[in-house]
Length: 215
Length: 396
Image (cartoon, chains in turn blue, orange):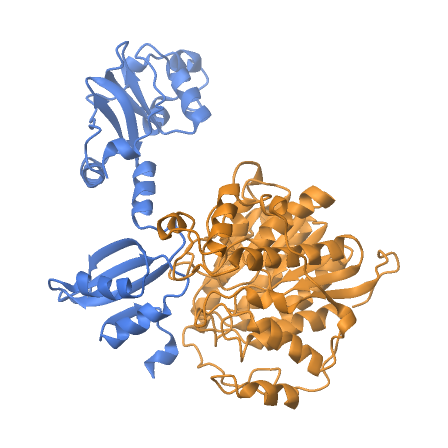
């Protein structure tokens, strides 16, 4: 999936000559934590996060000069330079960038103009969708040897049972690197025939496993 | 059940909606959703003299207009075509039809519309004081969506019934769903409506269909705070299940104060059910209707409509479980723990498994669960999270 398909297009922004008070209002009114600062051409010139706001806001114990502080221009407090992304970036790259740079949002820039934004929340939402959990289905986990062709074999058994697969995840089996776990979300309320067939073919279905099956 | 003197006057205590036509909702010979359950349950009730012909009312068929209270016109047209074998496989797929779960079958529109009509028959009986309570065990198809069949369900009788109650009787409905699967179709139908409150207690969607029903699904917009979900851990046993049911039902009804209660009584949370992984026994199926009955009298002048739902061990589990709903509605007391011999003799030859011969499950119906304590503890946390808003408001 590319950034273009998951970014928010209606981005809230302010200009460098806006004040800290305006930024506070905008963030709390829209319940957002990141505010890109743009110039007249919509070029990203800085960014402000809720942490910056906390840092520069007057303390409730401060008796004098509160109003003055709130009139501070954003150009004096905004962060620069800003890490930006492109609409054709991949979701995995963005996730990695968030971790490596320890950032929580990425303004998306094309042709020098701000056209969208991605936050941690959007990223999480996308990952949830990739797991297929938003569509009705049953989940089946199978432990397979870490070698070529296993996904094909297991998927073939699901195909034989005419079940549509919503999503597939493949991840290493933590306790033993000679194995992998395949996670399928299958569009059926009755996965029993698939599970029986998998077991019959000698596959290790991790779930659903009833305690009775241990006998 | 003790009645207060100022309760509405009704013609009879309870009505049982049934006709053999309801058995026509049948996908295929081997499909796990088998309405033979209705026949087995009714016969069991007859054999213990808990029901007479006067108690039974015939279901009507829901009109297209009634179906469109919830369903898209295009979807209904597609089901009608499928009903005559005229819907192409490609088109069917867009509507969730022709899948392993909901295959197409001849007459499926009429069969599904009758099932919805049966629930509406139950609704009318209660709302027009023909009976204090009513049950349609053929209903409870809670996975049906606005424009899509899902999880053995084509039309969603409960969603249609709730909308019908709103429009026709202007009443507020509390929907309580104890099927082992999440009541997703009904929940999404009223997710932004503060005049319908939904409570679903089910096995966690971690592995089980449909996957939704997390504790943080609480409604949307104006309806926020009017959807409740209690996803129980796999292998949950009776005590923990009932703790979740009793606490949530009592606290939610006190908060919402409905005019009428609609309960969905799926019987697939039983340990013998082949599709799910909960470890409850017949005990919960005795207790579930008991509390619904009590609260209906306490809050809704007795107005209680019950529908069926899931339940895939149709021989050993469902007839006994569902008979309890009717016995509770009519205050019928069992004189013996033994099932009538005539019933056992009549059906044993058809059953692929030995029938259970007593109303209570035999001891050791399932193997003891080693992680019982942790599971109960986890469920308690889930209950606390689901009811947190109600409990903290009460303190203030």
